[in-house]
Structure formats: structure tokens, C-alpha cells
Amino acid sequence: MPVGILHIAARRYFMKEVITLPEFDELINKQLPQSLEAEQAVLGSMLIDSRCVGDVVGILKPEDFHLRQNQEIYETIYRMFSYSLPIDVVTVLGKLKENGYYDEATTPSYMRQLMEITPTAANVKHYAEIVRDKSLLRALSRAATDINEMALKEEGSASAILDSAERRVFSLRRGNADDELERIGTIMVKLFNHLNELSQSDSDFPGVPTGLKDLDKRINGLNPSDLVIIAARPGMGKTTLALNIVANVAKETRKTVAFFSLEMSREQLAARLLSCESAVDNYKISTGKLGPEDWEHIGTASSALSQTDIRVSDNPTVSVTEMNALCRRLDNLGLIVIDYLQLMTRADKDSRSAENRVTVVAEISRALKIMAKDLNVPVICLSQLSRASESRTDKRPLLSDLRESGAIEQDADQVIMLYRDDYYNPNSAERNICECIVAKNRRGEPGTVKVQWQPQFFSFSDLDTIH
Image 1 (cartoon, rainbow, N blue to C red):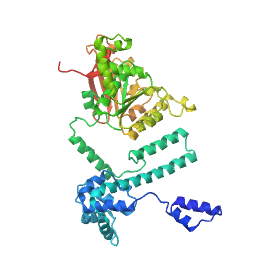
Image 2: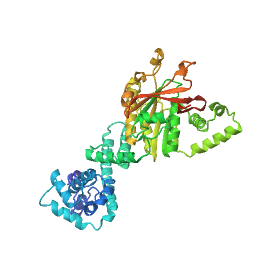
Image 3: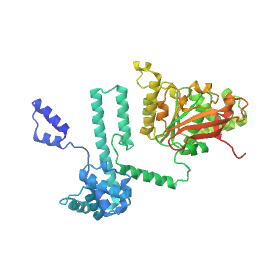
Image 4: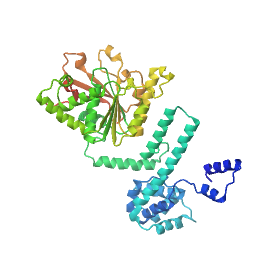
């Protein structure tokens, strides 16, 4: 009998309330959502026609089955499919024996029953969706119980509990059971599907393009769940590079891009985007000194930008928790950009805000990486560098120059540092050339990529090495 039912019955007993037989039966029947008929129909369909197994494994995981015996049979078929083994009632029975799931008295008769009660394999997707819906309802019920328990026990602040609750519900919506251990066999199936998609793609790299081809090849594009840090001294072009990437991702992927600016206003960011897209000098846009040709160019650029789904926030006090909550509500999210890390604050703005700033930045950095994993999108965060590089003869930045915390280096998947020699040396031979120093790269080798810097348009572009 479920614990909740025992609790209700005991409470009614101690309160001297009489529990009638119908009431007791009603309590017993309050079980978790399930459809054993649909579970059996799914298994029977796969045994009747193995061609439908590929459709089912894309919908269901072994833990979606409520009955333990059904879960064991599906897990066996799931593994056989991942190894491209033939699937029928004889081979599945053999594998059940190997896996220790076989009972001589019941298993063979149950397998025959599964095939007999299944009307047709043609409706297997419908059966699988019923099983998935019931599994989702069970998970939602468990999540609601856990959330209720956290609230009643007051485990943490209200904002922390709310964030945890939103994360639990969001993970269910995305189909991620991030609080469970996943079998390596399940992970392998996902990996093989991903590798198959990559092999059929015409792209030279798996991630979303930044718009700078040489940089994309170095970092393999922007990949889901990656935290990318773009760091530089003031005036090097961090925000400009971020805006260039935002515009390119929004146009190329047609996905939603969220830009959180803690330093500049929405209008300033829009002006920079317009200058870059229209190739009209930013000074003209800032002062309004525009000629007829300029108006034509910015009109075309404005129309093109308006077709994208770029969302901008200029709230200077927004926390990672609030960013996470806002982004969860966005459909088709493709990228998050934050400008910049050292201006961010903690979610709990209490007396602890006076703590060591290094500790605070470390917590924010870790929260950004967790957000990237939770939302399964790349997160780009801009960061300031310390003045240490200014005192060196070679002023190119190093990882040790990351300001206020070494945890940034630890949490980031890629760290890209910007350096322009003409910023320090007016007579430099590399005029308007920016070095993108990939100091850390979990998806490839570190290295340096040179790009063209166009300050009048607030734009970066690939370097023309041919001419």
C-alpha cells in the first residue's frame, strides 16, 4: 500500500473517523498514472514487427514503463537495437536469459501474451505516446510532492525554492531527468544518433556558426551546454564581437537569442547592431547626420534585423537565477549572451553580498555553466581582464589575467581573449587587426585566430588573406 494512503488512513483512525469500505477502496485506487495496456501494446508491436523499434526508441526510455517486467523487456530490446541485433521473440528471450530477467514459469507465456493482445503494430507510435504521457504525469506528481515538501520544510529562501521548482518542471518539459543516473547504453544510442546527424551534415563543424569562419573552425562553433567566455581589456571590442555573433546566430538559425546587457541601454545596442548590419558609420547614426544613401541602407538593415528574434534586457541588477527563469519561458532558444560578468550580482541580495568578490564571481560563474546545461544552449559571457597585462612588455592577455576569479577559467568550455596591437602601438603594422586568442578550448586545440576589426561599423569580419 502506498505510504500516502497509509498516512491518510492512520490520520482518519486517530481522529476517530470511521473509514467505510468504499472510501478505503477509493484510497487504494489512487495510484500513480499508468496504462499497462499501452505498455503491453508497445512491446507486442516491437515483437510482431521489428521495423517499428526505431520509432519507439526515439520516444521512450526504459524508465518510462511502470511495470517492472515491461521495463526489463524494453530495456533488453533497447540495448539490442543499439547494437543492431535482430529483434524477434526468440532473440529477445535469449537476451532476457543473458541479462538475468528470465523466469521459466512466466516469461515465455507473458511474451506470447504480449503478441496475442496487440491488435496491430501500425499504431505503435500512438501506444508509445500514451506510455510517455503517463510517465510524464508520474514524474510531475513526484516533482510536485518534492516541491511541496521543500516549501513546507522551508529548505532555503523562497527565491531558491522557486528556482528549484521551475528547474524541475522545465526539465520535465524538455524530457531531461537531470536528477537520475542514466544508463550508458541509453547515452550511446543518443551519441550514435548525434554522430549520424553530423556525418550527414555539410558543415565543417558541429556547432552554430559565429559568423567568423576561422574562429568557428578553431572552437567547432557554438555548441549546446557550452559556456564561452570572451575576455579583454576595455576598448578591445568585446561587446562588438558579441553583437556580431548575436546577429549572425539569429539570422542563420532563425532561433531566439537572448542578450542581457548590464552596462549599455537597449537603444545603444540597437544602434551598434544597425551600424554593423547596414555598414553605415556609427558616428553618422549617433549624430543623425545621414544622407539619402545612408537612410536607404539603414532601412534595409532595420528590416532585416526586425525579422530576427533577438530579445534584449538592459536591467543592470538581473541575476543568473532571474536570467534562467526568463530564458526558460522562451521557445526555440538558441543562444544567451551576457555583458558582462563582473557587473552581475547574486540572486540573494542579503548581508552576504559583502563577501569576498572573488567568491561571489566564482558562484556566478558556476551558475552560468549550470544554466547552459539546464537550457542546453550555448552561453556567451563577457569578462573584464585585470591590469596585469598592462605592466608586461608583451601585452597579450593570459588566462591568469581573468579578473576576480580563477573559477571562470575552470567553468568555461572556451575562453577567447581579444588583443589589438594597434591599441597599444599606434604605428603597428597590424592596423585594425584583432587577435582572438583561444586560451582554453575543450572542443579542440588552443590557438590564435586573426580577424578584421572595423571600428567605424562596430564590426568584426574574416581576415582577407588572399589580397
